[in-house]
Amino acid sequence: MKMKLFVAIIIVGFVGLCPPRAAAHCDTMDGPIVTAAKQAIAKNDVTPVLKWVKKEAEPEIRAAFAKSLAVRKQSAEAKELADLYFFEALVRVHRAGEGEPYTGLKPVGTPVEPGIAAADKAIASGKVDDLLKGLSEGEAARVRQQFQRVMETKKRAEETVEAGREYVEACVQFIHHVGHENEAAGPEIEQTLQKLERQWADAVKRRDVETISRIQSDDFEFIGPTSALWPKDRALDAIKSGRLDISAFELDEFKVRLNGETAVVHYRVTWHGSFGDTDVSGPQRATDVFVRRDGRWQCVASQTTRISQP
Image (cartoon, rainbow, N blue to C red):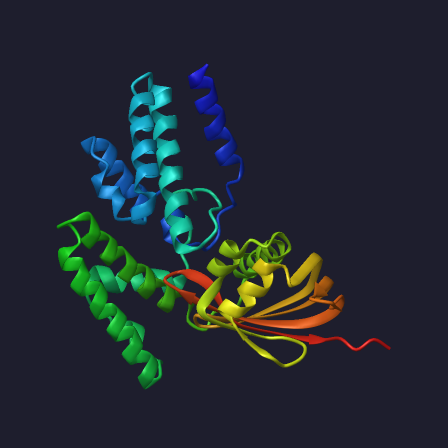
């Protein structure tokens, strides 16, 4: 019975696999995370993969590793399924730590975005000059600074798990910066940001300030229809206290513009609710500015403007 359940979990996980496309290499079967997972299984030691996940996620990965080792002893088929189960768990948790969605493991040979491939090549060779061609002086300096941090942390990466995490963090920042510089806002990024917007709206309805706080940066500011400037703590307090009471949101007409690590999201939103004794229901135009930090999108500024009714 347990074996059947385990197989079912694996099958369900692979139903969500996306067709081959340009993707971040951490999702691929020949990428660095799955490679590290294979090494861990061969050594019967989970340590080599722990650098790929946040410290708080370590217990989950240890448990998944132990379960995989126990199941893979049952048969050759069980061994293959158990390995895939562990690969998926590790990549999923790593992606969550980056603030990115998990869309399944990609097959060996899946194309990698040119910018990411170039960043990988620079790390492997220890040379960054090719990446600097065509960049402004200021941007070249930023890329070089990030690359130097990667090289410094790489020297100590195998000393301890924490040193490894520092190296992975440096790599993620460098690869994301280089890989996404001036990219168009493709479908995956648009979907990610739209999902965050809808999660944010749903959290406002439920007065879930923890979720809202994760989506917003610490220095977040909101400018409402009255032009008043609200810092993050004041905005959260209005939601938590119930002064802002929104029963429903309708979001549509999304448009996303991307420039490096910054995204501007325009959309139309219709509120149904009140602020204190004032009815704030009605359509508005909203603009949210998101910044990608350490691979995670957070909103730093938001503004809404009422749409005049004829």
